[in-house]
Image (tube, rainbow, N blue to C red; front, side, top):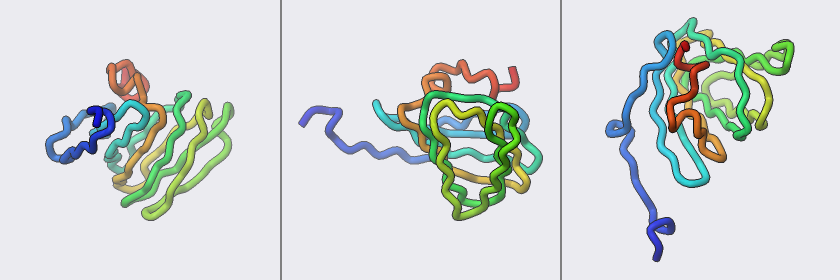
Length: 125
């Protein structure tokens, strides 16, 4: 069996914790075709408007996020613990933590900008 066909196990506690803009933190693991990230957004933190070609699924473990979608950022969606949100590729979106939030983001394909550190919108640069 080729290495790419073997299972792999990560322990979140051994995955690098990144400090992002504000007090947002994240950890992520990736394969060739998929990425999963743990993201913590304390209340009041904002993810600025951005877009990416990757499809995204956000699974809310705890807390509440307000997403704004579209070029005018005028479509609001509130997601809470237990909700799963699908964001199509190339859709402009932003988010605000209405409560302390812990969520999982899944991307396909993996986010190259997260991997190489060029995701300036989330780093406050």
